[in-house]
Length: 584
Image 1: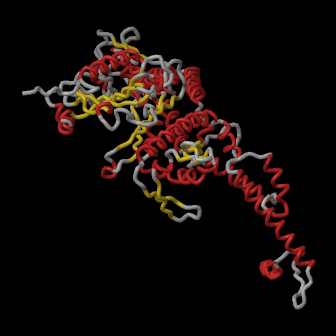
Image 2: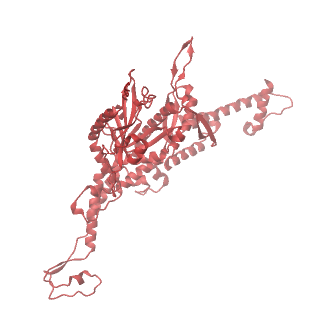
Image 3: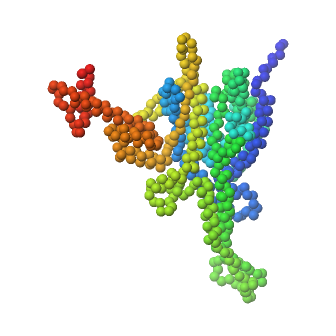
């Protein structure tokens, strides 16, 4: 009887154990960042007094002012006011129609992935932790097994890469961890039974009620890059838990020689707020403002104590004074009994000095300092100062003071463009079946556009002299603009349109002069305005030529065409076009 030798899979317990050892090294290199992330979450929830662990503070007031929180909330509001929208541009003329279709269906794909919520959650983390991370994945179980693109906000605390790299794509391994219920994992993957003891420990945020993790296990998504026989670097993926392989792309015959994703990149996009050297993660506003916020809160604590002491009547009382302490402490009594004679040496009031003006000034100066370093001045929130009362002047000052927000938005738009490129790559790989997307047409009506990944895959370049020229893969550029603009941006654009109308830019006779002025101007949507002015000028020239032809022709039975200022009416233009047809 022959023994059946089971073939060893490329990814097994040994490989998973090696990956877990690499993960531990990555965790040790990221320990300082993890601690900062946990502390920053307490600062954001205004629970940072827990970090002090000062026994003298027990039973004392612990005021937490919201200046830091207010700054972060305003930055998040700026980000949501400038929600991004993609515009796909072709690099070749043959791809213009495909680019136009992609520009219309990409917002639909993002909407189906609930991207606005992902965008909001990622911005909160970017402002709190210093880095926002999104994951762009293919979900094969979506739409009843048809599959769809999924975009998720990622917790930086649960991501690990090689210490010292500035770009995660340069890391040989990348780990994404999450905690899941052990019983649910065993139900989905029966091979986990008997391996329920969690072998990995992950950092966790501090919660007031605590977090029970006894019935949870850490699931690891391990991404790694590995060259194939031809030297191409392929991206592979392995999911394991408690040392057991749940899935591995190298063990999948369909993906072993192809890789998990054809684009060969880790499906994560990092968006740091303030850059740090030798790290893809940055630092955020909490790291910048926490020292100033600490000083403000300590002063608030001292001032609260002072106000309480100054408002409460206290006495220095000798044991020999003979004063009834209960009656003295009861403020409702009009008479306090005393045994013997009172003197200044045995009984006197203890008066606490009130707050000094310079103390309040110093505290206000620290508050102004926090506003200054965060760029969250009163003017950016609509406050007025220095006699500025005009609405246009307030709006102009708000726009001038929001350059920090615009700088943050530019980095977020660059990250958004990288996410859109990943989405296009996933469409190219997985959109095998044609899908229909409902879009809003140019006239505002609903249109249904079919699309499949075939439009993104290499197209045959044809033949020359019987020789095939190979294939060409469509390549696109993505330009990001703000879909939801701030109130000032809309107001400014509306004012620009009214000024152009009042100056006669849209009068056909002024087309040449208007185009010269538009060449010197720059505002969003200026190309559409230039195109419309050119069309007006062309139409005016055609009407002038047609009028000259009609004036030069003399035909029996037809009256000369006249009108105000020798301009053609609609009927005259129609007659002229009819004449032109008869004369041909």
